[in-house]
Image (cartoon, rainbow, N blue to C red; front, top):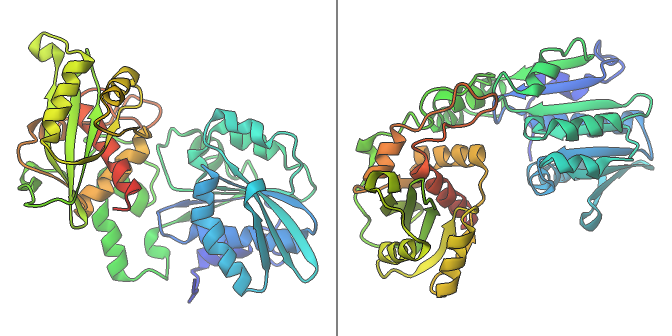
Length: 404
């Protein structure tokens, strides 16, 4: 990784703790704003530099939503940078520990994932000299507050970075709005403020997002989700089926009282196409179908193609069992992270890596109706007109798995 220059805001994040800084006595640093604005890189380096400037033989915590994402986003790229700067880095993956040393000093950094409420137990009982939260808004409040309570060493500090979400999010209300009260230096980053991004790159990112995601990820605003979830999708964007595909999957959102939606996906080149669909609403037709009847529809949808796997609604245990019992298809329960899935579907649709073919009429109908629930405290779409939308999210997770 090559650093050509830093913005004034990035430099402040790097050095706020230094004796020459007017902010050296602050207890915390909060960096929020747009994606690709340089806040994560500067915060990680600042955290390491500060920890070596103030401590030796001390324990710290590095926290992400998962340890895997933490390694991917920070540890792997940034340890290479630290080594270039003269630090020695040794990760003990089995223990979730990163040891960093330089000039006879060594500090220990424990890696934690704050995926859910149970994660708070992982960090209990520790004594820490500081903690860094990468993407703090994706972690539960209980985990963050437990980690903060571990920082009982004199001179310890907290480092938070995140992309904006809803202004009703607890972190926005309790930390960003109360930064002065919490003795925290708050720095807000815009994508355009990152000197390492060219105009072409900025334009490309701007073209990838629209609506709420554009305001949050490009402009760095804390705005409530409202309106259509996919406001950029138009029926005229639908396409003809490609002549040949080299791999096929089926995604399923299972329903008995609620509609069931299945999608046949084919890969042609670097693009995945929703070739055809099966959509059944028992309310519309006045009759519910059994698992065996749905399985017959699944076979018809496969249309003789060699299906690599069926990605199924993880809550549809009986239907998953039914598919496995027939022994024809491999079935994989889908990962059901709604917001993460919506973000990735948006990215794939706008970049053209995922396309919808003519004939998928119920998919087109739901795209035009699928809306954010503006009355919800947390970001969430309305639980209506969402069955094809759900099975597409499952397919998108599939696309990521096969390195689309």
